Length: 425
Ligand code: B12
Image 1 (cartoon, rainbow, N blue to C red):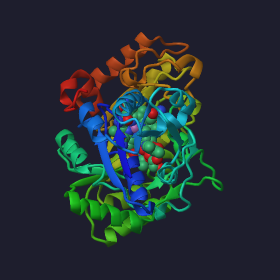
Image 2: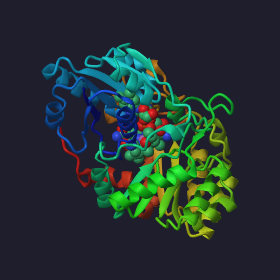
Image 3: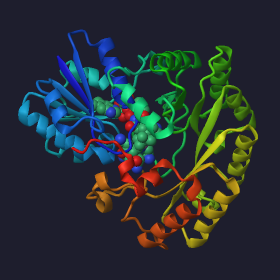
């Protein structure tokens, strides 16, 4: 059987980790002969992909909202030359709006949620149009993501070009315990519940076996975690750090942390385990807005957390959001003051984008948005009760100018799209 896996085109990418897991699971569990292919449209032209997918039995697409349209277009082109190809769509966008996807020409089947077991069932003949993902009971039973298959080397070289570091990412857990209204994370792994859907954590031993193996193979000089929230518990963080230290594995790393879960003790261990950078969604300096977005943090805690990171010499990246429905100019001033107070080494400021899967998505209002051209950096349609889109854009420009010496890669790319070595079609 020939299976082709595809990550459609977008300018902002990383390794296709989800497809790496699906490919590894299929190889481990599918009894028959298997020929597997992978394309990443950032690097591969449409023509290369359509040719490479020729004669596939199954073609799987991993899609966020901005990449779905390109995926569907590729599916139609592949089916035109390889009519027997069965096209399967999974990932955040198909999970959030499955009916829209199933009604799109070129799409044969949609998988909801985690795809490993579902894709295996499809390889074994499941042709239901909508397949519900069935998470593996123990995340530690999943084979490591197949990085040869997803051609991780290319992403590592890209990261090196952008950051000077040979780096890639790892997944340490599934399920986020938070409910932030602007995030779609829970559509795939489900709403957190301590009993029925707890955070599923990879044991430190297994995680470090994987990281060490990948680091050796690809000569990494840095690594990061793909988890939206890495520090879901002190026990997890400290056990990981202690094991990393015990192994004498000194590779520098970074993680996305949430202030509510952070303690000074945690940072002490992270520093000792050579964590060099934390990335934190601070979102707003207004307590009212923090409450409304269900962020679960206070301004005071953020200030404390940034202080601890500075104390231990860990670089601090702070990401902020504007444009919550009830936000006023006074709230934005509080955000500006918080940025000054936290003084992050890297700063990003985005405008709310109601991606499918977030609480802010309203199908009647946002059903026809062209997600391939809309994101939280360049969003030109979102406005709020108190602020027009022009007001929000004006504030974004003002804050980017004010903190110009430290803005994120993404802000720089908006001013200079030629920075991106992506193929164009
Ligand atoms: C790390 C990350 C990034 C990284 C890397 C992403 C990548 N690998 O390309 C970077 C920084 C580059 C990034 C960029 C963007 N991201 Co991002 N990102 C994440 C994050 C935190 C983790 C993604 C990840 O690697 N997960 C781990 C893998 C193993 O899980 P997975 O991809 O979900 O795969 C599983 C299932 O989805 C499913 N599955 C996936 N593909 C397929 C395919 C088939 C055929 C099947 C059957 C199943 C299946 O099975 C997989 C295994 O169980 C998520 C939130 C989260 N915690 O998941 C946001 C998230 C995916 N990102 C999001 C967004 C909006 C973006 C950007 C548009 C931001 C921007 N403006 O540039 C871009 C789009 C990138 C792209 N190419 O599509 C949104 C997507 C919302 C939506 N409706 O699409 C999320 C959910 C965060 C949020 N705001 O809610 N992102």
